[in-house]
Each structure stands twice: as structure tokens, then as C-alpha cells.
Image (cartoon, rainbow, N blue to C red; front, top):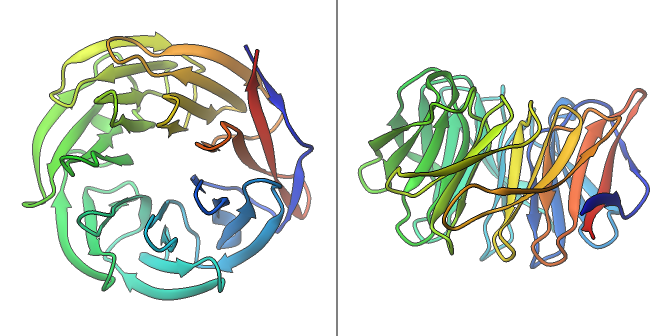
Length: 303
């Protein structure tokens, strides 16, 4: 199989790099954290057309409320989390927290917004309805990457790259209840939970990606491109889109063992973040340009 462009790159106003990309498949929207432009990019998931850019600060993570379509953004060095209405293109509320924010996760059942501290030791927990901080999770280590929520048990998982492990957090007590070492990984970055297969997929910057059960049992590991920064899971097809070091790759999650690498595309761009559209299976990547613009582009996995 190969990864091939579906459309030409689309120029996006404002230069600079991006962070996490999120897809709202139901509403046909793509959201990209245009970190260096202090904006949330909103694009059409069918055409790629840019619908707007909302000033929220130097954001990193984002998460969609599936009930309302509102977007929560982690506003990085602004030490804040915002709730954004992507229809009116307005910020509805902003809550300041003690430290910089990187990744976000939202649990629609508990209304918890989880915002991990960039290069820090805590997760800030907010009520997504009131946008008030309701707690803090204290973590081991001094670095954090990626968050994932089990939609059935509502347990939260968090990568701890400097200790090469991930942890389990109880959503009621907001305490770490389990630490799982990942000795084959270096600088853990991607973390995704496949709810139908009941497996966690954890990737390292050293070109190794592994699967674990929620109990922490190791299922298997595989090679994928070194330097991968972020991965995004299509839970319908159990396919994982990953990017980093200028590469885009797709893997298939295995319910009983190691993930399978399906294809890798080596680009000439500084691509390190990508999202997969669960409706179409298309991949959406973003990257900074060399001039006053930046770019987004759609790709697809083909035989």
C-alpha cells in the first residue's frame, strides 16, 4: 500500500509551525493548532477550504465536544484553556491555569477537560460546562505527552516520556493508580486508546511502537519511522496515522499483538502532526512554509 496526495497543498495565511490536528467527522471540520500564529485553524473536511482562524493564543492541543461541536483548546504559553464556538468563530470562555498547556482530552460523560502541563508534572482538570478548574493530577516525571480516555471506564492515560512509561489516572479521585514501564521505547510521544480492541498504542521517538492492554500487559512492538511526534486513531477501521521527521505513516492496530505498518510517505516538508478522518479515511497534514504562508494537505492510503 502507498500514501498518496489527494489534493494539492492549500496555502494557509500566517507563517509558522503547527501542533495537534483534530477531526470532527460528524460536522465535517478539521481543527489544527497553528501554534506560531496564535490561532485555531478551522477547515472543511471535504474540500480542505479554510473556513476561519480564531485567535486563542499559542495553542497546542484541542478536543471536540461531540454533543455541541464546541472545541476546547490548550493555549500553551498563555497558561489557559479556552472553549471555542467554531460556527460563530468566537471564544466562549477562557480559564487560566498555573502552567503552560500542551495536550488536551475531553470525556463527554464526565465533562472533564484534561489539560497536561507542557514539560511539567501535572494535569489540570476542568469542568467543560462551567470552564472552572476542579482538580489537579500530580504525575511522576517532569515531562508529559498525549492523553487518552477510555470511554467506558473513563480512566485517563498519560505518557511520561522522561521516565519512558505511561500512567493510569482514576477519574473520580484524580490520582495515578498505575504506572506501566515501556522499556523498548525512548521519549514516549504518541498515545492512543482503541476502545473496541481494548488496547493502548504507545510510540517512542526511537522508531518503536507498542501495544498494551489497559492492565499494562505488553502485547507486542513494531518498527515505524524514527522521530514520530504524533499519531491519531481512526477507531472505525483501527488505523493509526502518524507523523514526524517529515514522514507520514499508517499502521493497523492488532487486538492481540504488535501493530502492522501499512505504508510510509517521506515528504519534503516539516510534517510532524496529522489526523485521520474516520468518515473517509483521509489523512490531513499541516506544516510551516518558507514564506508568509503555511500549508495543509489531504492524503489517502491506497493499494
